[in-house]
Length: 150
Image 1 (cartoon, helix red, strand yellow):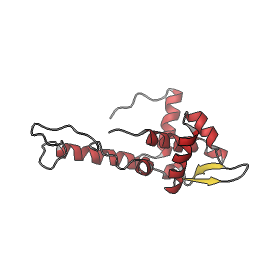
Image 2: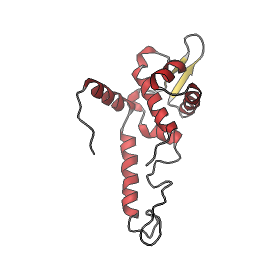
Image 3: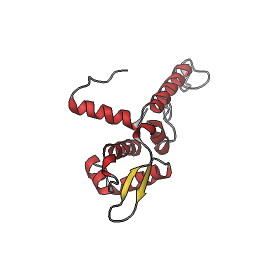
């Protein structure tokens, strides 16, 4: 599965807003600087997140962006679906089995495996929230968590 730069930046942006939720609104320039995201690209990402109901904005001197819901209510799948057409690992793949069929073709012996992988990815993204990711990031910063393994 390949994740686009847009999706990576959207996830980092949403997590940044969750981390700074207590600050109220957050300026685009602050997110861009902390997350090393080009400001013009970030503006496009924030518009997509806003259209998807993930963030809201406030105009004016104290304006900026903030999460539309609690981090515990925002799943990774809700963000990924805004920035990717799909999150199937078989999208865009051109590998083929011995018969020259794509691995996910209905006559391929690998099809069931790919469908299981699709299902696992979707369930994992649906079960993981921004709050979970913020907790994980804090544990990694504190050194209180081992490497992740499936």
